[in-house]
Length: 529
Image (cartoon, rainbow, N blue to C red; front, side, top):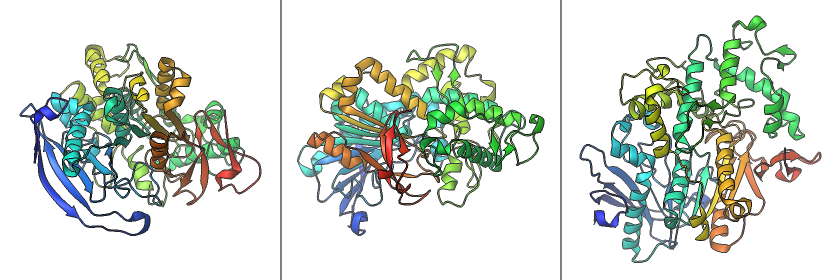
């Protein structure tokens, strides 16, 4: 089957289905997925040198009349298949496809190097592929998928949702901002909404980590994590291995004076003395991570900053036996110090995820010179490249601050972010929320959006508190039943499997009430710092 270019809301040369395969029912219990038709296809570019947008659409034999679009991750480049659960979706709840949704996603218009996958930014050298990644692929994929879905069932799609985390979270926010008539709701986790501004912060942090003796070993990262926990864990009323009162920790913890089991965290005199302490160079690199990027120019949004990260209490890739630890390591500081040329990503080693991101962004988005030195570009004073950088922040970032049209149509957003995300700053999501509040007002914002922070949760995975949250059921009830989200519960699947906490609306955090099982949400109340 073909979809003509005229049926797609942005310019293409049409779309073609390349295969359709009936997938038999499989699984049992909540993991059961009924029979569906897997449709693969290509959306063709206008620029003959650009790659196709490759997509997958899953059409259940028993359809519930609705659809979910899945977002990607990193620089994308692989198809978001739509066959799994929403970000942080619990294993004991059925996935959208299992619930009868038509589900779909794409690679955003380029096919990544299989080894570096989500860190391959080479596509940025092509204007159409860059625009597709920045947001255009969302509209193109949605229009093709909806047309095919309605052709399959000879019926209209009653409601369409978007679910994504990280880059997929940015895509979700762009989707409901640019095309509010296309979606009824969105699940937005740890959103890299201002991705280009984040790249600039990555550049600042990368340059700090590249300094002599500044890159901390995994053992040193554990020292910082343990010292943070020792100082801050009980600030929420109980020492339970999770820092929930992050605001108080940020205000009180100082790695230069902190103690771990009575011993100074800082090496004597500040010189590196091995894995038993942190040198001044390593502490400085962590302090750069903790503090905001301050620019000497304005981004397309008018802003001049990207916030720092919640650094104290964050797992930046410590030694550990959790099966999630390799993912945590990859999505944080990796195994190799940033340098020029940037160390390659291999099956077992990599530089910090953000450093590879910065390297690729400088080479293919900013300078379009694959031999450019990422460490030579000062993100705070980029000189002749400033105009190009500002342009990219307008292209890539979800800069819209008025979601009134989406809200007026009954659209709802559930947004959450882990307090100890090492890749996308929770403080940046707070910044986005405040931008919306400033534009729309608190009363209107509360009618359609909820934002929660999850203590201990990192970027997509955490060995401290790995969140599981049935956001889809909550969103369905809000959009389709008019039931505003009641008190939410989030469960841990890794740190202490099965323990629960209240999911607190920002700026609240879970505080122990003084009695009761510390692994049960009912023993906590949402408190404001």
